[in-house]
View (cartoon, rainbow over the protein chains, first blue to last red):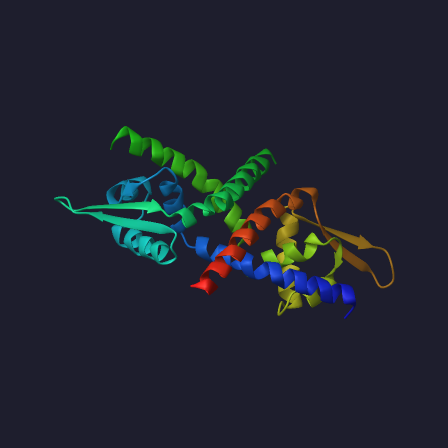
Length: 117
Length: 117
């Protein structure tokens, strides 16, 4: 194996792991829609349920727990009657927005390009 | 449904489609490794095969065809003996690098954060 290929293999795998970590976090059908819905501020469970087409309450609840576990979403329970539960992106979760915007920008241009063909 | 929820639902789905388009292009086990390997310039099939751990020649060939079909990768055949086949990112394919860098940057920090916990 030439030195160059060896060098590139190291560079390649060094970048690959973080990229795959990030894609793992964003993968699945519902993570992105939930994160996008929470971009616009605090939301109640029922708001999210209305905004995200076709998600079941069971799935929404599961996905929110996953995001909470990854410290991306914060869940706050208010002692009202009936109890109010609100969700918001954590400061850390907000760092994902840059990634999602890069994906959205590229995807938007790609869609335009394909439709022109 | 309140006007705000209605508005957010439109914003949400408007952003969702392009993001999902982009993720679709990058999904699967091998697309990202191939794109990253081609970041560093023109590569022969055999270079790619050596650099990307565990990919079979059959899979590499299939994935390169997919990327070529999406106009992301260009394949050039040189009339040498034996025939030389080289792959390179197209100008359009290079626009993906910004997206991949955003993913890599986020994933890198995420890994660091998780390891500190």
